[in-house]
Image (cartoon, rainbow, N blue to C red; front, top):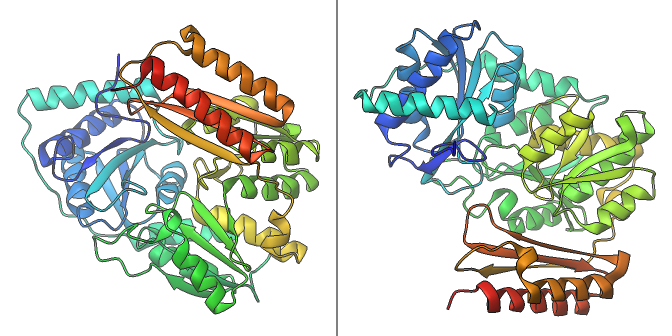
Length: 447
């Protein structure tokens, strides 16, 4: 059965509008409470949120729905998605709920549900929850709210956990951190300062409406300027719920998730902490990452786009490290999801242990020129049935040989065909990406 509410990252929409209206959100809490009542787990749920102005009301409505089935709530207040995942797994909780829309603007919000395992619920469980949500709505459930009081000890235990993963302090490391006016605003400066770093924080004055606004991991210019101005050793930018991190080096170079995977993989491999000598990434990771890893005897396993698929493959093959270019990196020894602050700690650890700058550590990654072209389509036909498209793909493959990659796929959320071409020769990348895109426009494009 196709899910109607849950997408790849929970329920998401404009706050106050369906499916994030008060009635539906109360029904979500009630459906979750019903599941917990019959699960045999503790009758307690941990709830956290980012800094959006709509967060407290949504958290209150979830809590009111849970109360219909006598499920209690511990409220972490403003915290991170990986923080809720950690607490759900390590506390007396049947589940965790994070109220966030990640990198989206403040008008949007979302509900992410995690099981006691710390992982997102499997698709079949989300489908059962949806059925119960719709049943509540048919039965005429009334919207409700429930008063919540923040338990500061919840965040303290999460920060303690992060600090415990570091083998040494950060004394002498000068850094600028961009908190995206979001979940990391209080926690990241507190964590890194506690470990001895000299911290300058920007994007750390949330007002309910400025989360991700010209700051954070989607807008790195401000961080780059601050790193250069402060003559810092490193800069790190989080997104709204702090489950990802991107970096800026001392010279002002952006260091993305691919470079982080390479840096972490080499470090972990030398220490015997990379089972199977394997790293998991998506089809969008640059060919340069694959080549650089291979030169160290490390295999790159690729998955479809999405951290969900990365994690599933990591669990299947027992991998310790995986992630995406976007900075969503999973260190499975310590976390069940991507964690921006944990990722930052791992990068800082390599820097301080090796005595090398981030510029030096990232220099081995030769980024192949890559071009992505989106083609709006009027219909979707199997790509293998499109003769002109297949002819252009074969021509591109012949031109690049083993020094390039061609990826053509349909978007999972929009009426788009996505063409990605990468290779050593930038002019060939431009030529063949346009040739393939033109063939798709001819056969499937909208007028």
